Image 1 (cartoon, protein in one colour):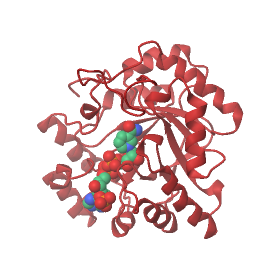
Image 2: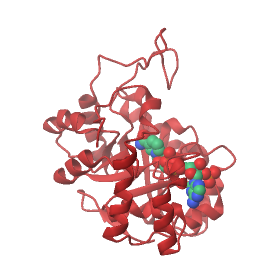
Image 3: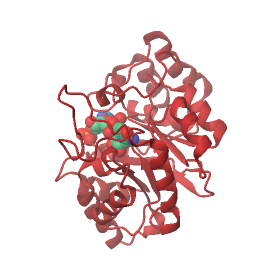
Image 4: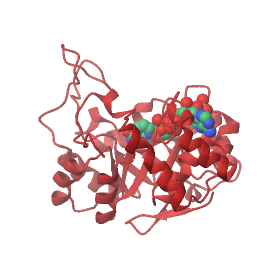
Length: 304
Ligand SMILES: NC(=O)c1ccc[n+]([C@@H]2O[C@H](COP(=O)([O-])OP(=O)(O)OC[C@H]3O[C@@H](n4cnc5c(N)ncnc54)[C@H](OP(=O)(O)O)[C@@H]3O)[C@@H](O)[C@H]2O)c1
């Protein structure tokens, strides 16, 4: 699976990346170094995942084995409590990862949170709701991210979890169009509206939680199983290949060596496969795995 997809920066992004969210300590170093050794070239990280130092150890192992920095594509993300301290948060990630630069720096969510709240990562108000920083706008954050481009510490900048509503707010103020919008995406949540909008603006889509995250019911979907049977591949491969057929890149998290290898078997799905996969949400409605857990309305439509 060597395919890369074009970005509006003139460079490319590998079609498949290794996810590292919820990759536990003691597991993620091995996962990263194994993935790179079997051909993965994109590693997706985030400050908030709390495991970038161990991801960095995996990267170090890969470099020691002869892989060059320029052959890898590393993404990391600005956390919500750092919206007003963009470069500080990037520096923390670079230090943990042991890198001089990342290939892509994303605003993790378009919602600044109180940097002085009751928790450094997930501050809450007394009623249990998110402690959002109303004095700071995601547009200010983007302007600070644009400034990073001249530091050499980021090759490209982008966003994550942006709906059409948020992009329409941001784009009129942006000197640099985001290279990527990383969103939750799978056959239960095709997100056609934001996918089409981003395409029209030259913003590449990266799909996250493509397998439906941990314990996902997507693996039991009859339609997906039938497509997998037809092509003699695993269900996971169909769920990942679905995004490549849509022109998106995709992130698959695993700390299991055999699955890391299995997930590389991206295949070309035909239009009848895609019609079958698209039929799932039409029958069953939309399911979001990650957005509701965040507890903030991001302006995504209820119906797709
Ligand atoms: N920008 C954002 O806000 C955001 C949000 C969520 C995720 N992400 C990124 O996207 C990545 C992927 O999303 P995700 O972690 O939510 O979930 P995912 O990749 O959809 O699913 C991961 C789960 O599937 C299992 N798995 C992996 N390959 C499998 C296979 N071939 N067969 C059966 N099970 C398999 C993994 O188990 P094992 O690990 O035990 O093998 C893990 O429990 C994240 O790791 C993160 O890097 C970004």
